[in-house]
Image (tube, rainbow, N blue to C red; front, top):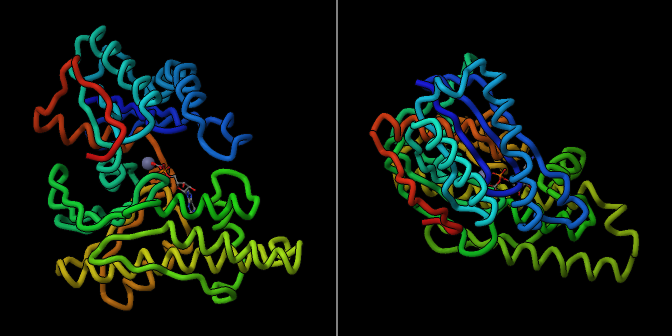
Length: 335
Ligand code: KG4
Ligand code: ZN
């Protein structure tokens, strides 16, 4: 079975080809146009998707050495994400599939991040057994999910305001770092002292998160310090990044620990763009060793947005015969 995956929910246009669970190609076109604005500009993202989608699909098919007539189905991101961006992928998927006479499969972007763990790329690395817990941390979402099967997932806790990725990106913006700030903070944190500054780590009830207070505290802290020393950020860049990152990681993993205790499940997976964070990866590994958990950390290319994860999610739905009609429309918010 050959499934073409299409991802266009935010600022990456991606197409990937899977033969069953085996990856044949995964092509991603990033959009540099947002860098000057310090964040993703939805209108510009839609236009860039429109320009990129056909070449990206062509390259994905060529790299996989698969002709379009061989395709069994087309899986696309239906949501959540930016509506204009999603419309480009959805409309492309509908018309391409209609032309080829093959079914379309709608995929939820967040579930796809989790299912990225089941992509086979011929390299070692075990797949999690069901049930497992997944900490999904991206630019738009922060969730702890109980995964009972490829299609049965239950959100145990989530952020009530900003996502973890947003906390990284907004703090980086306050420090004057380029967008997206998460990888910049990660790089700087490697040479900084994580205990240099203390920021308030808010604790919500149950397994929920809140990150907006941390961002505000960071902003006020820097505003006060800059009054005394205009060079404060420049002088303490690495320590600021390391301390902020340390706070976010502690907030994330405290709830994971609690989720393990409450659910009795000790298989933990990471998913989403923030799972690329080297500090978070290491802290989870350390915590797992201490507590005898089994961990599953995705490769970097499957952590951030990509279409291979959409194709694998499509594969599982294909097995269930779960196809979408031509009347399917995107959704912007989690459902
Ligand atoms: O999953 P993703 O590619 O897109 C969404 O679905 O949102 O996640 C993007 C987020 C951004 O907030 C970015 O700053 C963050 O992932 N990110 C990181 C790192 N790499 C990407 N955050 C911290 N450390 C990183 N190394
Ligand atoms: Zn994502």
